[in-house]
Amino acid sequence: MLKKLSLDIQQQVERGISILRQGGLVAYPTDTVYGLGASASLPQAVKRVYEVKERPQNLALPLLLADASQITEFAESVPPIAWLLIHKFLPGALTLVLPKSNSVPDIISAGGITIAIRIPAHPVPIALVKGLGTPIVGTSANLSGKPSPLTVEEVYSQLDDKPDLIIDGGRCLGGKESTIVDVTGEIPVVLREGAISKEELKQVCGSIASGEGD
Image (tube, one colour):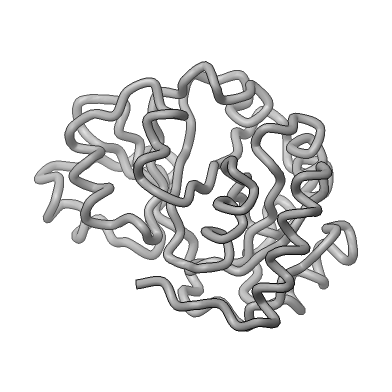
């Protein structure tokens, strides 16, 4: 269950929503690690995320949603196994790779046909998405290839003042990145094992495969 935001955090979130609306970048705490967000509906803002992270633009970016009801807007189709995983693990540390819908800008999917989606179990990104009215990019607030930050200090040490706002929500309690599962084929494929183990996934899926990046 998501906890309520303190007045201080609520004020930071409201400022963050305003910045995101104007095409700015906001770093924020999640249930896993600190994320770097931009409005998914503003391609120029998403481009800045790639630039700030020094991330190659052929690597797709994940989307953070506020609620499972939004998934069908950004995924062309959602197979039954995906819904089982959604009901079991979301909100939480699971990122699902699904066939993308036409509403997803190519700069987010790196021109590919899939989209990675997560609903975090943390009130700050949920409040940002709800206030903005559109998903935000859900990539970690680090330089590409460097460790994912768990504190505001670690965000600053890598990105300096490049984000327009860093929301200080204290240390991220999860400490591990989300587990990424591709559910576009017959058998789910773990692309990255993170906070949710393959054993936990198997209890829901029955059979599960490991991808090259796992």
